[in-house]
Each structure stands twice: as C-alpha cells, then as structure tokens.
Length: 314
Image 1 (cartoon, rainbow, N blue to C red):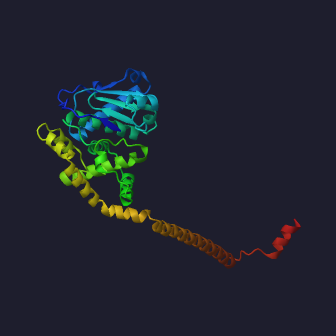
Image 2: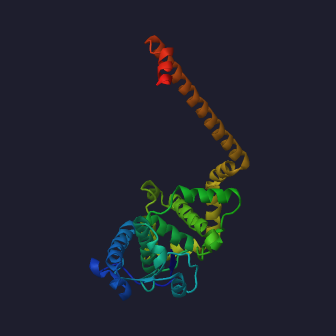
C-alpha cells in the first residue's frame, strides 16, 4: 500500500466527475475475468468512500490492473518489495494490484485496501506538492479505517527498546523491507493521529477525521505553504520530539509488560490460578459424593449384602 507521487501541480479539481459506472476502468484482462464485475463494484464503492471521508473529489477515471504473480507485480512497480498488496500512481490515476496477495485477503480487508489506494490517488491529485510519506500513509490508513490495538502495541514496544524508525527516514518512503514494514505503517498512523490532535483538535473529537487536514492540504492558496512547513527539518524534528514525549508513558508500560520479570510473574499467576481451579473442582466433586452418600443413607438405599450374593450366584 504505497503511493507513487513524485510531486506535481494539482491535476484534478473534482468538478464534472463522470457517472459512477464510468469512474473505474479495469484492464481488459481483468474486465473479462470472473473477478471483474466484483472488483469493479468494490472499486466504485471504495472511491466514493474515500472521497466522502476526505471531503475531496477527483474527476479522472481510475484505472486498475491486477498482476498475476509476485514477479509480474514487482516488475510493474519497478522492483519494490513484493510483499506489497497494491500501489497507487496518482499522476496516472492508476492502481496496480498484486492479485495473489489481494485475493488472499478477506472481503473486508480487500475493501480497505482499495479505499487506502483511492485515498492516495485523491490526495496525490488534489494536493499541489508531494507529502512526506508518513503523512501520506497516515491519511490513507485513517481514510480506510486501518489500524488497531496491535499496531499501537507495536509502536509502544519499539519505543520501549529503542527500535523506532526516525522521522527523517519515513519522509521519503515506508517501503523499507518486510521486517520493518509493519512498524513503519504503525508509526505513520500514530504520528498522523498525533499531528491531527495537535493541530486539528476537532478532527480527534470525530474519531480522527482526516477531512479537515486533507482539505487544508488541497487548498490552492494555503496548501503549498502547509506542505512546505511539513518538509521543514526544524518542524519535523520538533514534531518528532513532541510525539515521542507524548508516547513516553506507553513506552514505559511496554517495557514493563515485555520484561522477563513481568512474564515470570504472569506465568506464576497462571500456574497458581490453574492449581486453585483444579483443587476447587476436586473439592466440589468430593462434596457431591458425600452429599449423595448422605442422601442414600437417609433414604435407606444401601444395597443389602444378599443382593451381592444373588448377583454372584447368577
């Protein structure tokens, strides 16, 4: 999920967009394939969802091509990491999809992938200057509703043990290899949320709504200056320091919860809990047996000795 936008004047102002069915142009091979109708319908819905959540529209139809193997996909995107699911090319209004990886996802994740890439296209075509990669990815993830507890924990544990990726490295790209890829995306989302909270507090109140920031970035008058500020090294370093400071308590908790002492304590706790439960079950079983014996005695249900003899004689 990467956007290829080298930075260019805004080419789409969102007026006079084509009707829904004409907004997506599948490659002929995809259009004729069995997955073509479903992919086309999902892409239309994804484009409309991204436009609504960003508060921006584009008029250029979006071209979509799926590639049938990792090797084909890697060649098409210029040799980047093959673990990517899709790549958006804003200048061409094009999305390339790694077909095996994409169709291995469930329907919900497929839709989120398409919304993510549509967000890249919309932002790339409406914003006049290239965004830092961390913000470009963060906006796309917010638009697609991606991210959760797992990504927050990944950032916290990386911060606790000095494994965070520097902001400067996340300015140019997040395609930094499979080992650090998940952390890169998690950091982009966390940083973007912090930026919204810091400069667009109303966006946080509505669940980190990306539309106020997206519209500000796309504004023909104020947008270029805002983007220029984001690229300023002094602003970047200050933002990074503030973000790390805001996460310090989470980093501390992650260090405690990931430490060997805590793990030993947790393991001991689980062992004692299992032992207590086992003893309690044994006590309940013994109590039920004693109660049954008492009731049998009260009702005179003891089996006489001759009954045993009768059974044996038979």
